[in-house]
Image 1 (cartoon, helix red, strand yellow):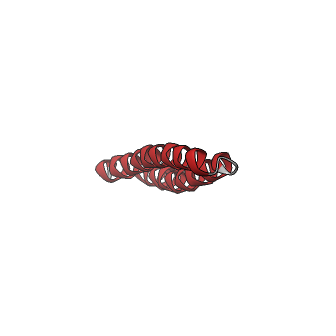
Image 2: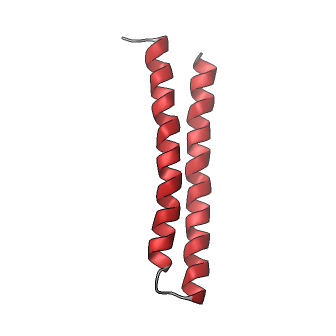
Length: 70
């Protein structure tokens, strides 16, 4: 079970890393083309990935509690 918890946490960390890279990419691309909504688009892109990563982190915490509830 410990391995499963670690894997779920690593997936969450990977999702955060992907979100950061994509957020920067969206911001840079939008800044070059329109510039007006670049910040909002980048924030929404990053927020989607952060929410998904948070779900994985909560799942890892639930697994941790199931293994050792104390």
